[in-house]
Length: 196
Length: 172
Image 1 (tube, chains in turn cyan, yellow):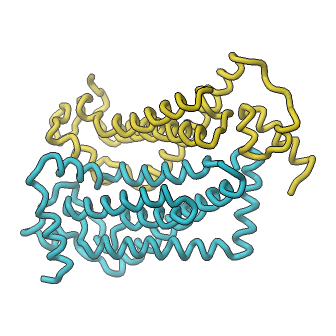
Image 2 (image 1 turned 30 degrees about the vertical axis):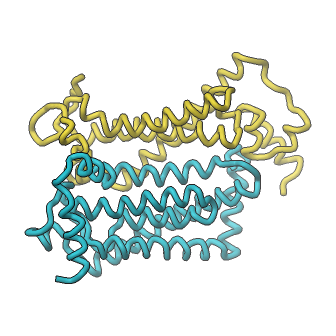
Image 3 (image 1 turned 180 degrees about the vertical axis):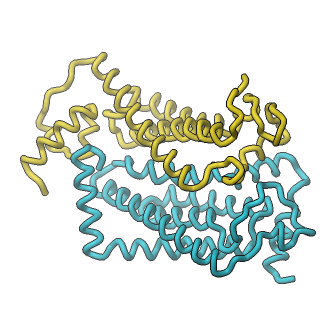
């Protein structure tokens, strides 16, 4: 048994002992909590208008985040199809206790975790405070996904790295003159509508 | 309270929309208070508006995750009942092929929630502003600010007028 499976089984075997922690991690692992918090963070950045310089930085970050999310989804989909790793509750059905719904898509890399870390890494340079909050939340989210039995440790770990790398990559790409020009044009149009 | 629609997906869509609407509305009020964008603030008192924003933000989350405790539906398979304290955390974890929401649906509903919350904020703050005082005339300071910053001193309608006028005065 490889170390990845050992860590996964160790974390997963913590469940079923305490109703509070089971409920806590079931809610944290939900498809409707962390993705919404990430989306709300992006939404809040758009209207965080303390001064014109920071507003522009924040609104560019919103574009970076959305682009990075799309790219992450696409790359995860490609890797999912290339690697096609089975879920831990199937691959290690004797040791893993599932307390979540049984997903049908491949396990590697963890798509929701990758999205969480992409948003975190995208927001971090423009708003450190929000970045730290999202980082903590994303780590708990990653842990909870292993705890409930739907991902291996390696799926989550690789997704986190993937999220960070893609966010940095997108930030670099978006600074290319022509892309930045298009971005600024969009922001100027929204300025007419008193939205930027 | 009985929920007469036993289609779990429709239930999810309705609840998710209410959830994101409340959360977006709360976030918008909170952020507009921090940024002092009075054109979209509901209450003129900044402290009260901040508290209002936090209440709405938290209420969205509480509503979505605690609703199964109060609404009868097919949360746990075939039985048409409320969830219990033991299983309320798990009943929201439904695969998209079994009635949950897939990513695209979540994105579209979130986007709709954002727009609805913005429209509500603009409408309520505009109506309350009109009830309290006469609409402001353009002043020198208001002319200087552009874009979203016009919302610091004006309602959204006035901001739109200012920005469209300003466009033809100088466009940098």
